[in-house]
Length: 124
Image (spheres, rainbow, N blue to C red):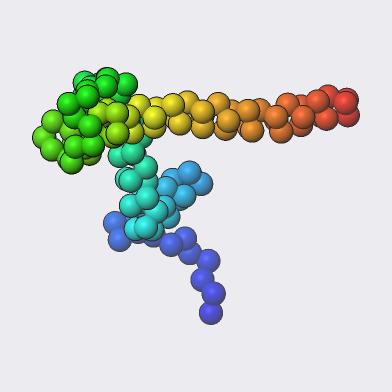
C-alpha cells in the first residue's frame, strides 16, 4: 500500500530541500579522487602565485660558481647549466603559464557567447 505521508527526519521535521549547487558539492565531496585532485590543483596554484615571493631568488640570476649543482639548502632543486636556480625558474615559468591559460580560456569562452548573442539578436 502506498502512503501519502511526507517523509520526516529523525527529529520529526520535514526534510530540507537542497539546492542543485549544494547537491553537486555534496556529491563532489564524496568522490575522494576528485577532492585529492582539487587539493593538488590548489597547492600548485598557490605555489605559482606566492612561491616566487616567498623564495626571494631572481630566476634569471646567473651564478657562475653554482653551475649544475645538486639540490641543497641554497638551491632546493639544484641549478642549471648557467648556474640559475631551477626552483625559482620553475615557479616563475608557472606564473607565465597561468597568465597564458587564463587569457586562452577567456578567449575560448568569449567567442561562443558572442556568437550566440549575435545569433539571438538576429532572431529579433
